[in-house]
Image (cartoon, rainbow, N blue to C red; front, side):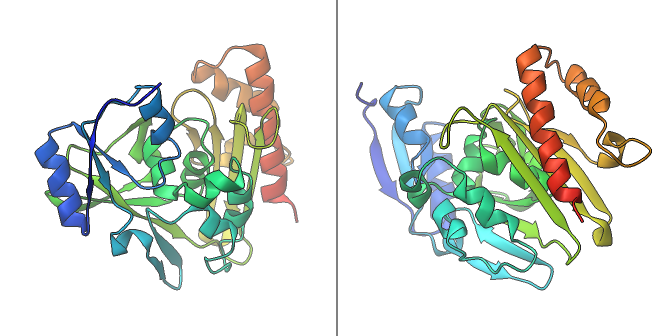
Length: 273
């Protein structure tokens, strides 16, 4: 199929991009890597009359290092992360997660912010950033605001962005030397969409022990205190995970087993000595 006819405008600043969004009154879409939006245009699942190219905005490709965190512009590509463009202190999990996403051609163009804004439940960055407690920096006509990643994602393919707003950057707190991030996904073959994702961040020095169940066909299921997933001997409690899945309405047997398997592996990696 061919996409619905549209115009293209290239924004050179955040203000210019948000102004174009407001002027278009819901008929515009931002575009960077276009790895998700491109197929949607071709299938006419999205029919904007204006595409706003944001790849030339300097703030969106910046990497700001701080002693306890790193802030990534939303147009940083997955390949940039895979190739070690970020400092690895406290962020060693990110290149490993990036390397599992789709195929290299997709990673070369796909952006971390684009993935988060697309909000596909099966997307790796959606689950991983929720597990890491990432903070989304949002800019719009009324200024800048911040939201935790798990509040930024409000549903499948749905975010908390208001009209005229865009995701400027993502702040990720570094893990301490004793911190560990376990990540595991179940898919039919490498590069395909995940059937289940498990992510666990265990950082005792920061008193963080968070688990996330992803690829649920809805919002990621966030367990803020993963100690509830442990038995008295601190082994993984599968029965509790099944109750969490029940509460989320995940009742199909195969899906439940896949989610339990993914979270079990992630838990083992995050808590290994």
